[in-house]
Image (cartoon, rainbow, N blue to C red; front, side, top):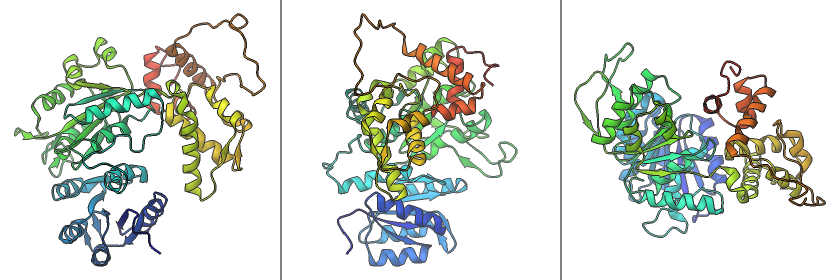
Length: 460
């Protein structure tokens, strides 16, 4: 018998693999789901049932998502509408959002990305008070450090000011930005993220500001930029510290005037956006070194936020590890493995420089290679490949007195530098292998090498 109390979703896509994958993940999330392979089937489903959310492709064999959106809006019980779109159809999706869609995701999109957006719809089925959109949705941890960061983020969400999030890689900066958007008055507008470090300068300029037809070789049609597409919502500028100096004056003008000019055009286009910038480097240090404009930094830094690294919220370690164990078990359709206390003690003896991302990758490795009912300390020892290891702590261990084991103070920065250097030595300077071991991106490894003045040619 169908449980009508569960949130419901209609998945419309002409690719069977996408439909089945989204339906399976929806079931695991506790949602009721139905599938449609195109516009005609979607109309049939909408005629005989009501849904809380419709997730729809833009272009399909028998029509497009705009027709489905029209059917949803004409219904006596309209559903929230979310577009999945290929890169080439982004302008159409933006047009659809202006017509009533809550957001869009570019393919390929993970279910976690979809769930972050859909939570503001499905969350209404839960214990949310009218008019409130708790920022803690999807956040795991009870530590004071994390809760203080979330409380500050909630306060920021209640304003329309620009935000700068400075935090280490792997702490969840993008998730925090998405949560601020969901908890803000802009939650019904688009949330668009762009990685300033992932694109070359010329392409980044076009992606941010858009271009006119013929603005450069290959510009066969006019294209709006992310500032235009995010109008009415939030634009996240990830890794803002890697924004080229030549583009920073244009970004400053957009932030000050809220107008943008496409490449190859002189007319100004007004945009109503809120900017959330994120970085894993200290921006004041970048300003001091002449790598970032001071006026742009002060303009972005209206509300500074941070997220604590995992080493500063170790009381959340067990909760996080058990969460990842459950996710892995659900994904593979098997019972969640029990984490032995000695396994957890081993984990607590490591400082996790890659933060929650490194922990998630490590748990996936352990659970994949040790499929038993219990994860033991031996599993940790066999899979923890870092050259630096804390001494194992056992139940029979007797604490040493301060006199017997004097503590030599060392800063976390020095510890991280040493750990990075040893890891690079272990992999013979291969940054890609070091990134895989530490659960970091190659870009972060490069930035850390630069931050700690390690010889760059040695670690190519």
